[in-house]
Image (tube, rainbow, N blue to C red; front, side):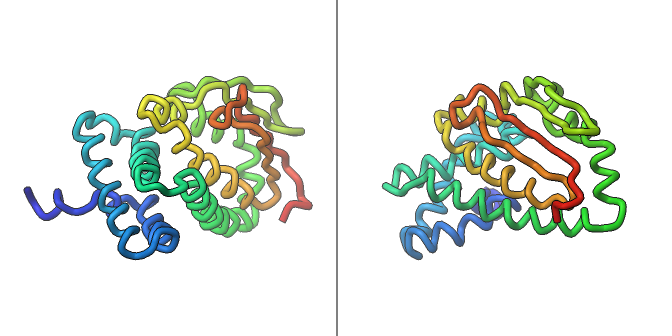
Length: 205
C-alpha cells in the first residue's frame, strides 16, 4: 500500500477537510482524532465496495454519510454537528458568492440566465425530478420533487447525513447580491419538495 493510499481520504477532500476542526472542538482532541480516522476508514470501505460512489453525487454524499455514521457510532449528536458544519461552509461560500456578484453587471448576468443555471445545477441530467412553477422576470420558482443526494443518502442508510448539504445550500444562496433566495421546505426534511424561489431585488445587498 502506498503512502497516498494510507492517508485519510477525508484529508484529501477539499469540502469536508475543514470538518475535522469542528469535530475536534466538539469531541475533544483525542476522541475527535479517533473519530476522524474511523470516518476515513469508513469512507475508504464504502468507496472500495463501489468505486462509482466517488462520482458526482457520491463525491458529496458519501463522505457526509461516513462522518455521520462514525459520529453516531461514537455517541455524538451527528445531526447537530454535521448541520453546523453545513452552516459553516455555507457562510464561507456566501462570502465568495457575494464578492463575485457585487462586480458591476454580474448580478444581472446571473439573473438573465437563472433558468439555465438552475437547469444545469438541478436538472434531470443529474438525476433531479423537478417542476417549474414560475419564470422570470418576476420570479424563478422551481420545486425539486426528488433529489439524487437525498436518494443516495437513503441507499447508504444515513438519510439525515444529506442535511448538512441542504444547510450549506441554504446559507450560501443568501450571498447573492440583488438576488433574493427563499426555500422553506426540503425533501430531506420529509416535505414533498424543495421549494426554490429566486427574485431579482435591488434592495437585497
